[in-house]
Length: 310
Image (cartoon, rainbow, N blue to C red; front, side, top):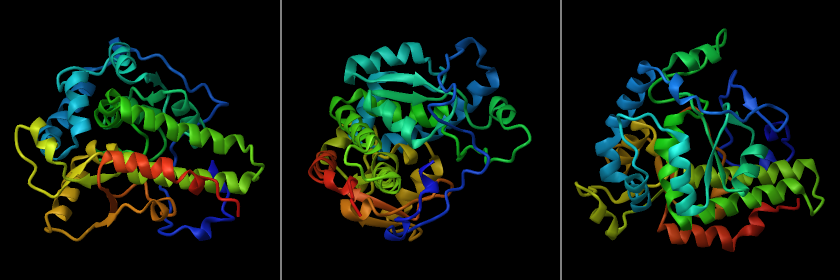
């Protein structure tokens, strides 16, 4: 794990402990690839999926981004049907060249970025609040609520991320983020392990504050996709927000001036790459982009930020 390298951590701001606890983290040395056993899904698991899905229908229709709404519509996700990777993956491949790669759980940064560079998106088949998740961590205490588990689950992967993979421009961007991660890891500039880890953390920060927990200014054309108009000045594109009801409503309350729990900050990529984060709490800040096109441009125009040489 890159967190074991800390020589340059003093350069970051907002340094917080990431509460991973006893979560199993898979690397290239593990048997991390799995086959989805669709027939093994229980009625209880489907009830959890339906409950989480339905609770977010109205908020996501009102507050998610155009790219998300378009992808959700064409992907065909529903509350009553457990996601079948073998059916969803070909639709995604046709739309953006990506495919779903079923995995056993949380992947380390190295494996995650390597897969992304190949247009392979890791997806898990276990859902929060399920017996299978409890069994996986028998003897260990982990957070396991409707709102949060530190291990990515099928609801986060599919309800949060998969709709964006139906967008070709987003798919190209995400693959290029993965390629930068792979280039950092290959260390062709011979920077050494400490700087490789530091630069990977910079990229991890960028990913966190953009496609995981990013928001953008409200786009005029997005309301054309909604059955109810957006009544705040922002819309949400971060998948970590979109897969959690409490996080969505926190953004809404802060945007509408009803809460000051979280800061809404302009997206400055130099600040973003130097800002760490916490896995386990509602975020105390969000960075606001002007548009998806502006996000893409900021990433491509500032590649040097991910190759700090000390």
